Image (cartoon, rainbow, N blue to C red; front, side, top):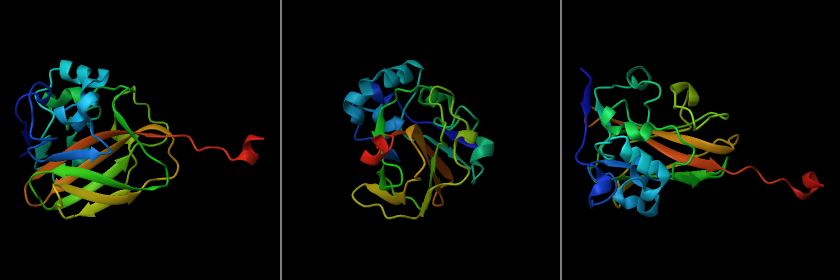
Length: 210
């Protein structure tokens, strides 16, 4: 049986112990959940975060589903990937091109930092949207690459965070979304996170410009 697990009061309205204090969320590249929490600082006051709060979100932390068992694409509906299909988190699904974002370099090495206060075993899968992704449209599974560009199983929790080393695809430019799935094996839960990222266009060499 699939169980939806929601969290407590709206984080924007209260002081919190840290981002996604109950379990976790990516802090770098910053996830929508963290950006719109008190830990997001100025980012929490962005138009996108204010709109998310106005959508009636119950909480931005601890976004998880139980008993998905790897059936993410069957369980989580198109247009609701960032909320995990949970109505309480629907503000995180808003299709906008102005979510707080992190600048990345295509083809470069990166480390995803996933803040957590409770250690779990399980597998992280990192997906990027395909070239041509339109952030002004609802996010669909077909917008994501069919395979993750990085996976990590049972990484160590060090200083309150998991750190996952990866190499980014080399063919992305413009605004994209990094989608993180964390399927636990120590609990029946799966966690979903959306991080908005921007890949600057490659600079032309002097010879190309002439």
